[in-house]
Length: 140
Image (tube, rainbow, N blue to C red):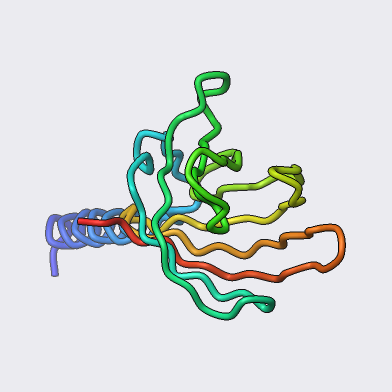
């Protein structure tokens, strides 16, 4: 094959390799805003203390901090009772906080299509620590 053919082949290989590398980027490095997740969600929760339950939560933006959200009805505590979580990439962190007599801490991972959040958290009522997993799904 001539030099020109080798040059064209090399360019094609480099272009295809670049496209492949870009498509395989780690999505955890992407940054999203709280606007991507503010919505009403269905929660399917599995608790060591109470078993399985399904209910809705509302996620809204914090007016005090653009990286924080407020989750209304978290742990099915009732409308108007809100837990705060901080957004970092596709991760939501619930720093230890006491809400309505419960100490709550944990984290969640947002799916890359913003349709689900997988949670793991603990809820301490002062007598017992409940270990909880939950999946939030957007309500269409």
